[in-house]
Amino acid sequence: MTMDGGRALVLGGGGVAGIAWEAGLLTGLAERGVDLTEADLIVGTSAGSVVGAFAAHGADLAAAVEAMQGRTRGATADAAGSGGVDPETVLSAFAILFDTSLDPQEARARLGAMALEAPVGERGAVLEELGRMLPRQEWPQRRLIVTGVDAEDGSFAPWDADSGVPLAAAVRASCSVPCVFPPVEIGGRRYMDGGTRSVTNADLAKGASAVVVLEPMGHLTPRETLRRELAELGDARTAVIGPDQAAIETFGTDILNPALYGPGFQAGLNQAAAAVEQIRPVWES
Image (cartoon, rainbow, N blue to C red; front, top):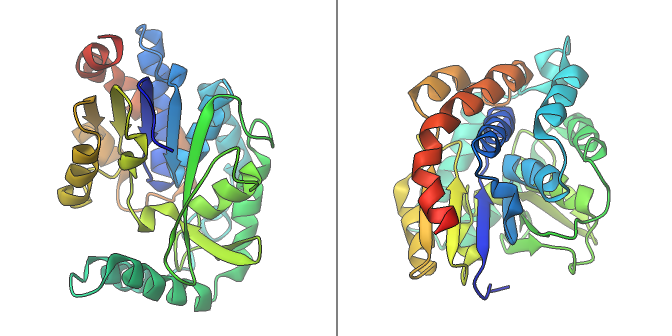
Protein backbone atom coordinates (compact mmCIF):
# COMPACT_ATOMS: atom_id res chain seq x y z
CA MET A 1 0.00 0.00 0.00
CA THR A 2 3.03 2.30 0.11
CA MET A 3 2.66 5.39 -2.09
CA ASP A 4 5.19 6.56 -4.64
CA GLY A 5 4.98 10.30 -4.18
CA GLY A 6 1.79 12.30 -4.44
CA ARG A 7 -0.34 13.92 -1.77
CA ALA A 8 -2.31 12.25 1.02
CA LEU A 9 -5.13 13.45 3.24
CA VAL A 10 -5.53 11.68 6.60
CA LEU A 11 -8.92 12.08 8.30
CA GLY A 12 -9.00 11.00 11.93
CA GLY A 13 -11.79 9.77 14.17
CA GLY A 14 -13.99 11.87 16.40
CA GLY A 15 -17.68 10.91 16.34
CA VAL A 16 -20.34 13.32 15.12
CA ALA A 17 -18.10 16.22 16.18
CA GLY A 18 -15.32 14.86 13.97
CA ILE A 19 -17.53 14.36 10.92
CA ALA A 20 -18.92 17.86 11.16
CA TRP A 21 -15.63 19.63 11.96
CA GLU A 22 -13.65 17.86 9.23
CA ALA A 23 -16.37 18.58 6.67
CA GLY A 24 -16.47 22.25 7.70
CA LEU A 25 -12.70 22.59 7.65
CA LEU A 26 -12.40 20.98 4.21
CA THR A 27 -15.17 23.21 2.88
CA GLY A 28 -13.55 26.34 4.29
CA LEU A 29 -10.13 25.41 2.94
CA ALA A 30 -11.55 24.80 -0.54
CA GLU A 31 -13.21 28.22 -0.43
CA ARG A 32 -9.73 29.64 0.17
CA GLY A 33 -8.19 27.83 -2.77
CA VAL A 34 -6.77 24.75 -1.01
CA ASP A 35 -8.81 21.69 -1.96
CA LEU A 36 -7.55 18.75 0.11
CA THR A 37 -10.11 16.43 -1.49
CA GLU A 38 -7.88 16.40 -4.58
CA ALA A 39 -5.47 14.15 -2.66
CA ASP A 40 -4.05 11.11 -4.43
CA LEU A 41 -4.86 9.10 -1.30
CA ILE A 42 -7.43 9.63 1.44
CA VAL A 43 -7.09 7.65 4.68
CA GLY A 44 -10.25 7.60 6.80
CA THR A 45 -10.63 6.30 10.33
CA SER A 46 -14.01 6.18 12.09
CA ALA A 47 -15.55 9.65 11.56
CA GLY A 48 -12.83 10.21 8.97
CA SER A 49 -14.04 7.21 6.98
CA VAL A 50 -17.43 8.89 6.56
CA VAL A 51 -15.95 12.22 5.48
CA GLY A 52 -13.39 10.40 3.35
CA ALA A 53 -16.08 8.49 1.46
CA PHE A 54 -17.96 11.70 0.67
CA ALA A 55 -14.77 13.60 -0.22
CA ALA A 56 -13.36 10.85 -2.44
CA HIS A 57 -16.64 10.72 -4.37
CA GLY A 58 -16.53 14.49 -4.86
CA ALA A 59 -19.73 15.05 -2.89
CA ASP A 60 -20.77 18.40 -1.45
CA LEU A 61 -19.66 18.16 2.18
CA ALA A 62 -21.87 21.00 3.38
CA ALA A 63 -24.91 19.32 1.86
CA ALA A 64 -23.85 15.97 3.33
CA VAL A 65 -23.68 17.36 6.86
CA GLU A 66 -27.00 19.14 6.38
CA ALA A 67 -28.56 15.84 5.29
CA MET A 68 -27.13 14.03 8.31
CA GLN A 69 -28.41 16.76 10.57
CA GLY A 70 -31.84 16.49 8.96
CA ARG A 71 -31.95 12.72 9.45
CA THR A 72 -31.21 13.05 13.15
CA ARG A 73 -33.08 16.29 13.93
CA GLY A 74 -35.57 15.56 16.66
CA ALA A 75 -34.11 12.13 17.35
CA THR A 76 -33.42 11.19 20.94
CA ALA A 77 -29.90 10.60 22.17
CA ASP A 78 -30.75 6.92 22.57
CA ALA A 79 -31.62 6.68 18.89
CA ALA A 80 -28.83 8.70 17.37
CA GLY A 81 -26.18 9.57 19.94
CA SER A 82 -24.47 7.88 22.82
CA GLY A 83 -27.50 7.65 25.10
CA GLY A 84 -27.97 4.42 27.03
CA VAL A 85 -24.24 3.73 27.13
CA ASP A 86 -22.42 3.96 30.44
CA PRO A 87 -19.49 6.36 29.89
CA GLU A 88 -17.52 4.68 32.67
CA THR A 89 -17.80 1.34 30.89
CA VAL A 90 -16.49 2.85 27.67
CA LEU A 91 -13.64 4.64 29.42
CA SER A 92 -12.57 1.55 31.33
CA ALA A 93 -12.69 -0.47 28.12
CA PHE A 94 -10.47 1.98 26.23
CA ALA A 95 -8.04 2.10 29.15
CA ILE A 96 -6.89 -1.35 28.05
CA LEU A 97 -5.32 0.23 24.96
CA PHE A 98 -2.95 2.25 27.15
CA ASP A 99 -1.72 -0.68 29.21
CA THR A 100 1.97 -0.71 28.28
CA SER A 101 2.41 -4.20 29.71
CA LEU A 102 0.31 -5.58 26.86
CA ASP A 103 1.24 -6.09 23.22
CA PRO A 104 -0.90 -3.57 21.26
CA GLN A 105 -2.68 -6.28 19.29
CA GLU A 106 -3.42 -8.23 22.46
CA ALA A 107 -4.80 -5.07 24.05
CA ARG A 108 -7.07 -4.56 21.04
CA ALA A 109 -8.20 -8.18 21.24
CA ARG A 110 -9.16 -7.72 24.89
CA LEU A 111 -11.09 -4.57 24.02
CA GLY A 112 -12.69 -6.46 21.15
CA ALA A 113 -13.86 -9.18 23.54
CA MET A 114 -15.62 -6.51 25.59
CA ALA A 115 -17.12 -5.02 22.44
CA LEU A 116 -18.47 -8.41 21.35
CA GLU A 117 -20.15 -8.93 24.72
CA ALA A 118 -21.55 -5.41 25.18
CA PRO A 119 -25.39 -5.31 25.10
CA VAL A 120 -25.61 -2.70 22.33
CA GLY A 121 -26.95 -4.80 19.47
CA GLU A 122 -29.94 -2.56 18.84
CA ARG A 123 -27.60 0.34 18.14
CA GLY A 124 -26.43 -1.37 14.98
CA ALA A 125 -29.32 0.42 13.26
CA VAL A 126 -27.42 3.70 13.65
CA LEU A 127 -24.49 2.27 11.68
CA GLU A 128 -26.82 0.81 9.06
CA GLU A 129 -28.33 4.26 8.53
CA LEU A 130 -24.87 5.76 8.24
CA GLY A 131 -24.00 3.29 5.49
CA ARG A 132 -27.14 4.13 3.56
CA MET A 133 -26.32 7.85 3.69
CA LEU A 134 -23.05 7.52 1.78
CA PRO A 135 -23.11 9.29 -1.61
CA ARG A 136 -22.44 6.03 -3.48
CA GLN A 137 -22.33 2.41 -2.41
CA GLU A 138 -19.33 1.54 -4.57
CA TRP A 139 -15.75 2.54 -3.86
CA PRO A 140 -14.62 5.82 -5.47
CA GLN A 141 -12.09 6.01 -8.26
CA ARG A 142 -9.91 8.24 -6.08
CA ARG A 143 -7.92 5.98 -3.76
CA LEU A 144 -9.52 5.66 -0.34
CA ILE A 145 -8.40 3.51 2.60
CA VAL A 146 -10.87 2.83 5.42
CA THR A 147 -9.50 1.37 8.63
CA GLY A 148 -10.93 -1.26 10.96
CA VAL A 149 -9.74 -3.73 13.59
CA ASP A 150 -10.70 -7.39 13.95
CA ALA A 151 -12.58 -7.56 17.24
CA GLU A 152 -11.66 -11.21 17.77
CA ASP A 153 -7.87 -11.11 17.39
CA GLY A 154 -7.07 -7.39 17.37
CA SER A 155 -5.45 -7.43 13.93
CA PHE A 156 -5.49 -4.29 11.80
CA ALA A 157 -7.68 -4.24 8.68
CA PRO A 158 -7.13 -1.43 6.16
CA TRP A 159 -9.68 -1.78 3.34
CA ASP A 160 -9.69 -0.22 -0.12
CA ALA A 161 -11.34 -0.83 -3.48
CA ASP A 162 -9.25 -3.97 -4.01
CA SER A 163 -10.17 -5.56 -0.67
CA GLY A 164 -13.46 -7.04 -1.85
CA VAL A 165 -15.23 -5.45 1.12
CA PRO A 166 -18.28 -3.26 0.34
CA LEU A 167 -17.63 0.41 1.04
CA ALA A 168 -20.64 0.80 3.35
CA ALA A 169 -19.59 -2.23 5.41
CA ALA A 170 -16.05 -0.88 5.75
CA VAL A 171 -17.33 2.52 6.91
CA ARG A 172 -19.79 0.97 9.36
CA ALA A 173 -17.03 -1.18 10.85
CA SER A 174 -14.63 1.75 11.06
CA CYS A 175 -17.27 3.69 13.01
CA SER A 176 -18.15 0.86 15.39
CA VAL A 177 -16.93 2.37 18.67
CA PRO A 178 -16.41 -0.53 21.13
CA CYS A 179 -19.13 -0.80 23.79
CA VAL A 180 -21.16 1.90 22.00
CA PHE A 181 -21.97 0.09 18.74
CA PRO A 182 -21.85 -3.62 17.91
CA PRO A 183 -18.92 -4.93 15.84
CA VAL A 184 -19.76 -5.29 12.14
CA GLU A 185 -19.59 -8.68 10.44
CA ILE A 186 -17.56 -8.82 7.23
CA GLY A 187 -16.65 -12.10 5.60
CA GLY A 188 -17.45 -14.13 8.69
CA ARG A 189 -15.29 -11.96 10.99
CA ARG A 190 -16.43 -9.10 13.20
CA TYR A 191 -14.73 -5.73 13.13
CA MET A 192 -14.66 -2.61 15.27
CA ASP A 193 -13.51 1.00 15.10
CA GLY A 194 -10.21 1.57 13.29
CA GLY A 195 -9.49 4.17 15.93
CA THR A 196 -8.68 1.41 18.40
CA ARG A 197 -5.41 0.98 16.52
CA SER A 198 -4.89 4.74 16.06
CA VAL A 199 -7.24 7.68 15.77
CA THR A 200 -5.29 8.76 12.67
CA ASN A 201 -3.44 5.76 11.15
CA ALA A 202 -1.30 8.31 9.32
CA ASP A 203 1.44 5.75 8.64
CA LEU A 204 -0.76 4.39 5.82
CA ALA A 205 0.31 7.47 3.84
CA LYS A 206 3.90 6.27 3.78
CA GLY A 207 5.60 7.18 0.51
CA ALA A 208 3.60 10.34 -0.05
CA SER A 209 5.50 13.56 -0.66
CA ALA A 210 2.95 15.68 1.23
CA VAL A 211 0.54 14.63 4.01
CA VAL A 212 -2.11 16.68 5.78
CA VAL A 213 -3.59 15.14 8.92
CA LEU A 214 -6.89 16.36 10.36
CA GLU A 215 -7.38 15.00 13.88
CA PRO A 216 -10.58 16.07 15.63
CA MET A 217 -9.49 14.38 18.86
CA GLY A 218 -5.97 15.80 18.84
CA HIS A 219 -6.61 17.58 22.14
CA LEU A 220 -7.60 14.34 23.88
CA THR A 221 -5.19 11.70 22.58
CA PRO A 222 -1.56 10.95 23.51
CA ARG A 223 0.96 12.44 21.10
CA GLU A 224 3.34 9.49 20.97
CA THR A 225 1.27 7.44 18.51
CA LEU A 226 1.03 10.28 15.99
CA ARG A 227 4.74 11.07 16.40
CA ARG A 228 5.58 7.47 15.48
CA GLU A 229 3.28 7.61 12.49
CA LEU A 230 4.77 10.86 11.23
CA ALA A 231 8.26 9.38 11.61
CA GLU A 232 7.12 6.56 9.29
CA LEU A 233 6.43 9.18 6.61
CA GLY A 234 10.13 9.98 6.30
CA ASP A 235 10.89 13.28 4.60
CA ALA A 236 7.32 13.96 3.50
CA ARG A 237 6.04 17.50 4.04
CA THR A 238 3.42 17.31 6.79
CA ALA A 239 0.80 19.48 8.45
CA VAL A 240 -1.27 18.35 11.42
CA ILE A 241 -4.45 20.25 12.29
CA GLY A 242 -6.46 19.66 15.44
CA PRO A 243 -9.45 21.64 16.67
CA ASP A 244 -8.82 25.15 17.93
CA GLN A 245 -10.12 26.28 21.31
CA ALA A 246 -13.43 27.45 19.90
CA ALA A 247 -14.01 24.07 18.26
CA ILE A 248 -13.03 22.21 21.44
CA GLU A 249 -15.59 24.20 23.40
CA THR A 250 -18.19 23.46 20.73
CA PHE A 251 -17.53 19.71 20.91
CA GLY A 252 -18.10 19.51 24.66
CA THR A 253 -17.92 16.07 26.26
CA ASP A 254 -20.35 14.05 24.11
CA ILE A 255 -18.77 13.89 20.67
CA LEU A 256 -21.52 11.51 19.48
CA ASN A 257 -24.29 14.01 20.10
CA PRO A 258 -26.19 14.52 16.80
CA ALA A 259 -26.86 18.12 17.80
CA LEU A 260 -23.19 18.80 16.94
CA TYR A 261 -23.61 18.48 13.17
CA GLY A 262 -24.42 22.15 12.62
CA PRO A 263 -22.17 23.76 15.27
CA GLY A 264 -19.29 21.37 14.52
CA PHE A 265 -19.42 22.17 10.81
CA GLN A 266 -19.42 25.90 11.55
CA ALA A 267 -16.47 25.47 13.94
CA GLY A 268 -14.45 23.81 11.17
CA LEU A 269 -15.52 26.42 8.66
CA ASN A 270 -14.39 29.17 11.02
CA GLN A 271 -11.03 27.52 11.72
CA ALA A 272 -10.17 27.23 8.01
CA ALA A 273 -9.07 30.87 7.84
CA ALA A 274 -6.18 30.20 10.22
CA ALA A 275 -5.47 26.60 9.14
CA VAL A 276 -4.98 27.49 5.48
CA GLU A 277 -1.77 29.37 6.30
CA GLN A 278 -0.28 26.18 7.78
CA ILE A 279 -1.58 23.85 5.11
CA ARG A 280 -0.99 25.77 1.89
CA PRO A 281 2.84 25.56 1.82
CA VAL A 282 2.69 21.81 2.51
CA TRP A 283 0.00 21.11 -0.07
CA GLU A 284 1.17 23.39 -2.86
CA SER A 285 4.98 23.30 -2.53
